[in-house]
Amino acid sequence: MENVMKRYELEEKILQGIRKGNLHQVLQTLHLRNTLGEPGRLEDRLTDWKYDLIRFMAVIFQEFRRLHVIDLQLDDIYSDFTQQLYFAVCVEDCKRIAEETLTRLCELNSLRAIYGYSPLVQKIIQKVDMDLSEGLTLQYFSDSLNVNPSYLSHLFRRETGMTITDYVTDQRMKCAAELLLTTRNPVKIIAKQVGITDVHYFSRLFKKKTGKTPSRYREEQG
Image (tube, rainbow, N blue to C red; front, side):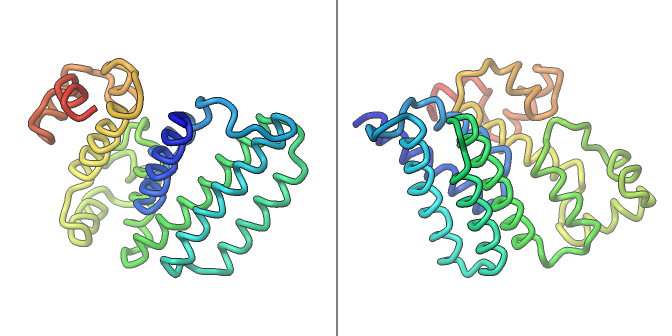
C-alpha cells in the first residue's frame, strides 16, 4: 500500500512538471517512480509494466485533453506510445518508451506555454528548460543562435522582464529545490546537475533565492 501511495504521489509530480514544461523535473521523478519495484501482480513482470504504463499514460493524456492541448498532436503521440508498447519485449523497453513519450508531451506543453514569445526567445527558454547542465550564458546563446549578444539580451529582457542570466539562475534554483526534496543526492552533486560546479557559489545563490541554505531547505521541507 505504501508503494502504491508513493507511486501516485510521484505521478502527480510528473504531471506538475509537464504542466510547467519542466523536462528535467519530469525525467527525475520518472526515474524515482521506476525504482519503486513491480507495479502490480499480474501474470508476468513485463505485462505488469505494460498495464501500469497504460493506466499511467491514460491519466496524463486525459489531463492534456482537459487543458485543451492540440488534439491532433496528442493523438500522434498516443498512437506512437501504444504501438511501441505493444512491441516492447522487456521492462527496459517500457522505461524507455515512457521516457520518450513524457519528453514529447513535456516539449509540447512547453511550446504551448511560450507561444507568445518571439522565435529567438522561445529557443532560449526551451534550451534552459531542457538542459540546465550546459554553460547557459548570454555568449553561449548568442553563438548558438548566431545573433548579436546585445540585441539578444535586449530582446529577452523586453519580452520576459528578466535578463537571460536571471532567468537561467531562477530555473536552476527551482530545479535544485525539486532535487533536494525528491532525491538523496549530496548538495555538491545537485549543484553540478543544475550546471553550477562551485558548491559554495551554488549555496549562496540558493540562499538568496529561498532564504535558506540547501541543507536547511531539505531538512525543513523534506
